[in-house]
Length: 111
Length: 117
Image (cartoon, rainbow over all chains, first blue to last red; front, side, top):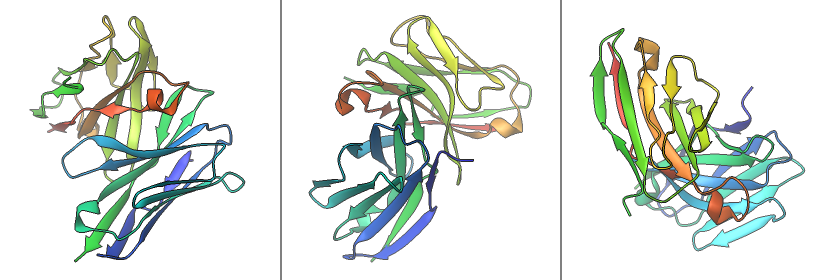
């Protein structure tokens, strides 16, 4: 099965908060990332969290990590139409030295 | 710095044809990766390299080959194109896979959209 899972679609109204969820299976993951892919472009790193943290805030973005449940979430406050994109959760599996990406969540923001 | 550059941006191949997708980075990164992206499937790792002269298979290597003769370049070769290889291909690089999170950030190219007919 997949090592990193995400729901594929999320739709929110402009101004609301968006919460994108991710679950992973490898408890030895050290870094967990959120990447953003805008239409027709490559992925860009949005933010990351180290496995010994449970929360990280960066302006409108809040990352929450529940290590016990192996659950990562990305909250976007005051979601704007420019936030419409695909958001990828990714984890660094140090035992394999590779970053593993989830399937991506397509966020649609309704004006 | 140009970052990660992929060429071509688009290509249509006939079944059985061969081609090479080019990828070059100017950040002196050790790690380079090739992914394919299919709708609803996320990114699947095809091959990766931890340094010049070293390559390893990822999750979906069949039908592809790579080489890494220099730190900068990591071309992906399709020898006998098949319709199942229709996809968007991304090359990425990172400085390291350990150490500070900033060193592990992957930088992506703009992608190559390949259609095999």
